[in-house]
Image (cartoon, rainbow, N blue to C red; front, top):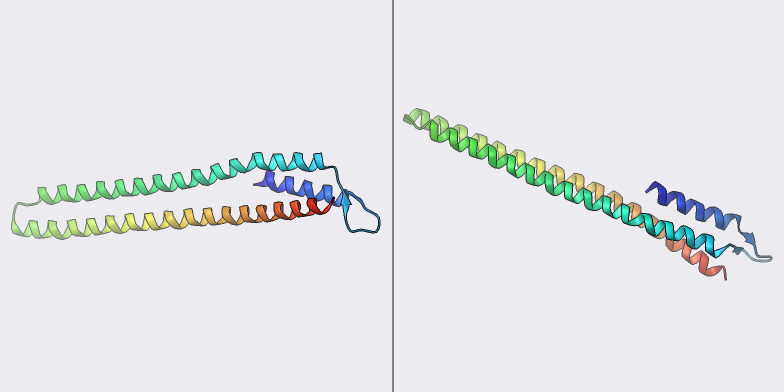
Amino acid sequence: MTKILDLLKEMEDLIDKGNSVPFSSKAMIVPEEMLEIIDEIKQELPAELAESKKIVAEKKQILFEAQANADRIKNNAEKQLREMIDTNEITRTANTQAEIIIENAQTQAKEIRIGTQHYSDKILYNLQVELKELNDQIETNRKELKEIK
């Protein structure tokens, strides 16, 4: 994102340093220089989009691992339960412990899933805001370029 912001700053500098048209608020710039910078920005954008896709993929992986962890904990709890069915007291204790373990595992998996979703949403929101700002700046620069005729 820094590279794109640097390129936008370079565009601003070109516009600021452009020769002013007498009796006008317009400036003359070299279109080739401006177009070159715009091309560089276009080349940088796919990298930013790839980063957001990477974040989404990481979110999915974390959710998958959380579910696998919850399943493993649940299976361990069920195994312990089967092993403890020797007497009624042991069975009752085992059932209670298994329910607690399963409930804790499900709670933990839900917390991980929610935390991951919040984290991913925050990252994607920040990226969306930055891309909107970038798009707004590009649109402003394009309008200024159109006015320079």
